[in-house]
Image (cartoon, rainbow, N blue to C red; front, top):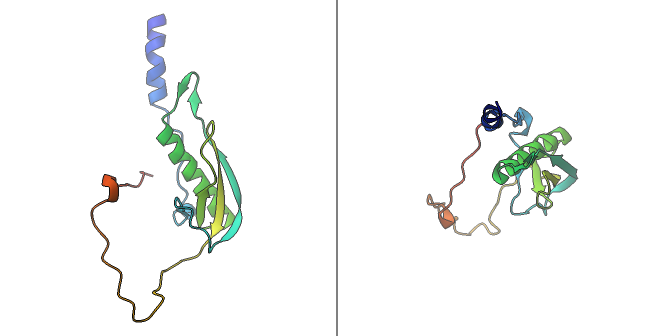
Length: 135
């Protein structure tokens, strides 16, 4: 009986769906990983948290970070913000985020006779490529 219980625990944990989904209103909220919010209006601060440990087992750090970002974007959308920026690293499943309204910022050349920008490279820089999470 003890062996069966020991084998069922990992099976039960593998079937967990944390249920953190990106809301429709948060799809247009971007994440300013580079911290570029200088021309934005601050809307406030959001603190989000998720489960980072299940008993003695730590959850996958990348999954925890992804869930924190999704929750921050959801909360920012409720505040009317269109941009979030992490204000620090996650700590025990909790993280502070700044919420900002930046609007649709488009870059325009400083001079009208400026040369057009070079075409974007199709090769990822640094050998890394990012892909969106499934909803």
